[in-house]
Length: 172
Image (tube, rainbow, N blue to C red; front, side):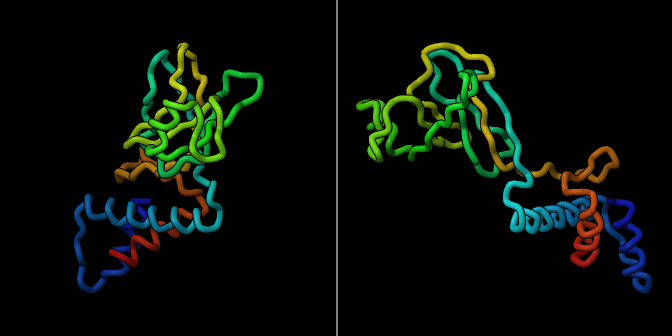
């Protein structure tokens, strides 16, 4: 994409011969990728869905969220015969849940709820045993930034790469 952008910009600025620093070109490509990503999401919300598993640790309530997370679709236990979805609660309901074993909404009984706490999420009731890859997080992910090298390819579908380049050309 970087090579195509350079060609487009050379053609765009034939008369004035504007020069761009490599870092500027990368910024234009990343801005364009973000715009196209938003457009793809507006048509198909789950296009950039990802999933990851993690292992719980006995007596540990908080776990890290994926660093590329945009939003959570669902969290589920996967070490049982049938996946069991954890129910989201607001952080303010945490203490009530710890005291009563239910949420203040619908009186959901133990099993499992989760709440968000910064870049972490908490599981209640707190796991009493250690599990191996027993929690699965389904989430919409943020696309990795481009760095301008050929080693980094956009996660935007290949058929839209030219749109990324065109957007970057117009905004440059």
